[in-house]
Length: 397
Image 1: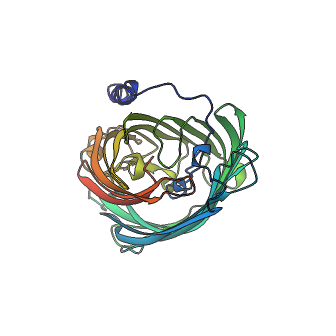
Image 2 (image 1 turned 30 degrees about the vertical axis):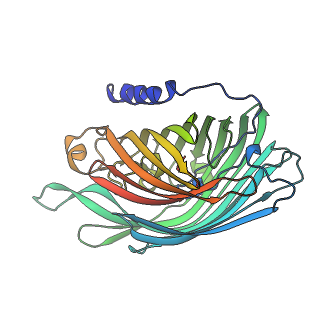
């Protein structure tokens, strides 16, 4: 632990130090929220992404999606997005409404509808999202094999099924700085399949309150080339809100963007997710998704995860571009609890080994109107003994 945390800090500092630069003081701000990985796509837009008077007041784009990873299998779905002015503010930052749906061959599916609103010259920002999920995944846990047997580590399938609602309201309190109040409600059941094929069904009802804080100097949301975005969230899941477990969730993202030349950008990110208290299995975090692409199995799961990554972006020909990215992560779990497979679990260590990630991707500009430059793309990434294929609308971060 003592050697790994300085390693992460050093890597992130090295990625950002040489690309750090002053930003113009007069830029509009934005904030992003991730009560779930799915909600993170409901991002904000800035004054640099405004609609000109003679352009359409509502820009709409539907996109099919195709994904593949070792856990979900092949996934097909669709994303529909509409961009519009939420009111008659002169600077007119664009708001967004979005619907997302996906079905995977392991019988996982989800549907999500949400909106981002920018009101009163961007002094107020509102996020709402509602959805339903049926998510089949797996964890790695220990079970006693019986009388006279030994404890083994098994890949344990589980299903999370239920509905969710999330909201966030923020107000600008200082230049580039927003503070607000948010909440998350989920009504679901978690069904765990044991090694003998018996099943355990546990309710997973979650009611939380959060304080979202953000600082943003990016020049654009969809394709930023300069600026900083800091997004933090402190959430409490108390027993007095009818929760079975009493715990705290914290999240911090720090993104930095630097233009290296014509159409060339270096983007860097540090991400932290840390949970404290009586954290239930279903509320743990794991290495993967956009935090560290290339990990899809959920092997590195625990109460805390830390990742850093950098991505080089090059719009090399008209609407076409490519990206190359690399990163490093680490996960923490209680040593007496089976949270991962292989040498990490058997060692009894609380901290995983450093988890590297590397990958490439292709980009194509699907929107270049209404002041927007929005890319769609595919990424392929490899991690420690794992890999993933990703489709995305907008950049990873």
